[in-house]
Amino acid sequence: MGMTMTQKILAAHAGLDKVDAGQLIMADLDLVLGNDVTAPVAIHEMEKMNSKGVFDKDKIALVPDHFTPNKDIKSAEHCKCVREFAAEHNITNYFEIGEMGIEHALLPEKGLVVAGDVVIGADSHTCTYGALGAFSTGVGSTDMAAGMATGKAWFKVPSALKFELVGKPSSWVSGKDVILHIIGLIGVDGALYKSMEFVGDGIANLSMDDRFTMANMAIEAGAKNGIFPVDDKTEQYMKEHATREYEIYEADEDAEYEKTYVIDLSTLKSTVAFPHLPENTRTIDEVGDIKIDQVVIGSCTNGRIDDLRVAAKVLEGRKVAKGLRLIIFPATQAIYLKAMEEGLLSTFIKAGGVVSTPTCGPCLGGHMGILASGEKAVATTNRNFVGRMGHVESEIYLASPAIAAASAVTGKISSPADLGL
Amino acid sequence: MKAHGTVHKYGDNVDTDVIIPARYLNSSDPAELAKKCMEDIDAEFVTRVKPGDIMVANKNFGCGSSREHAPIAIKAAGISCVIAETFARIFYRNAINIGLPIIECPEAAKEIAAGDEVEIDFDSGKIYDLTKGTEYQGQPFPEFMQKIIKAEGLINYINS
Ligand code: SF4
Image (tube, rainbow over all chains, first blue to last red; front, side, top):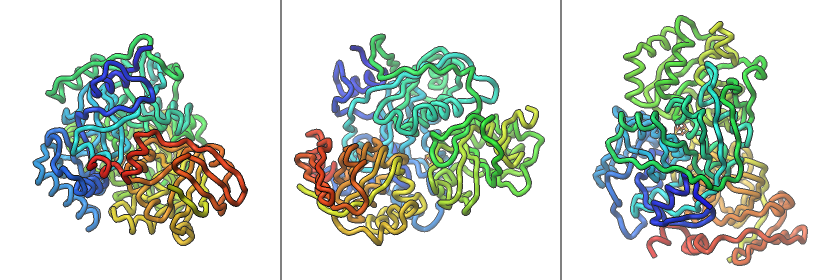
């Protein structure tokens, strides 16, 4: 029996010719990531270890993004802890706010992850880099501490689900709609402990930004990782962003998959996940009349330049509904700058939106857009759990940038078609 | 090694945002986190919980964020073991890495009720509901993980 793409990458990093699902392995890491919430806990754990140094100062990325620019004194102390640790250990990839971004948008952009890598991050959306053909997965702070010290992590080799994508999505249908559709299909634990491997001709019709969005939300189906094969678009992306050598792994012909789903992209419609789980999906024509108070466009899921371009296309020459708050947060400084140069920011501001510096901010109910009781928001983020963006009686509807922008204009969940687009 | 205590029961998909809401993540002090544990789905939990108590839930317990603050908060609140139908994988890892015992057992997760008195034998994976007089066989940890739990977490395991 052959190996899946994920299994091949893991085998190579464990120094083994072959691994099987369920096998426990110790793998070498190409990158270990932490943020201002998880790194302080990891740093504290590292202090308890016998060996105090880091395994490789170039293979650790520290990105204070959750409560930055520092929200309060406690978060300032956390960031200080990370900053001091980075200085003490000479960490190459520590990003202060002026050069930062939301970690999962930032690392690929800085070329810190390439195809064939094994990456762990003390953040559940570390699975985002599967878009590049890398194995990457979220872990906790203790794993991060052990990873920083030893350059290794233990894994149970996952089995896999195969998603064969065919066809071309219609206009306004994006990677976000594809992944919401899939999560609606298999449920929030539908891929528990497993890999989600995307294959098929349809992938060529998805931009890198679409693929990042999809891999990002693999965790919302409980998956260990989501992974895409490497094609021309991936190689082009890596040429533009990275200098490191990459390695392309392909699944064996006879690789074993627990189940195969065929998804015809041409039949998909814009999809919205209703509160309070990403699996509560409805297509836009089934949504009904839902009045909203806030729209949030951004995050590691949908804060990339393609997302902002789509939002600007919808908002161009329009105004947000009276009484509605539109908050846009580009995912990195580079995206922010590009959006400025392309005139997208001025479109947003003229429409009546506010544009925030890159931060996780409202996505996790941290700051910069917290909801009051009874309020409803459409967000391009990835989680709509109870209390995720504020009060426990607030509601989050997850959607694509196109739906979010259209909803901001009408004041209720809407599609660009409702605006005649 | 055994655990013995009263059960606090929850449903499916208990996520890390309700176990410890992000608004409290500006702290990483276990005692402080424990005070806010489960606040958004069970505000009374922190006043009701006694040291040694057991948490029982249905499927996909601990889904969502990778915050290790979640198992830390549960452990610091006094919970000696979590039994669930299934666990979300990052929570599973984190619990083992910080030395919070967790057991997957669908039957026990379904049948054990809130307030029951339960005993767990970690060596055999057996779960006894003393209130109901029932017994369940939970999935014991693979040997590799038992070593980490015995060392009381991954850091001690690496140090040894
Ligand atoms: S943007 Fe949201 S989901 Fe992404 S890393 Fe930040 S808090 Fe997590």
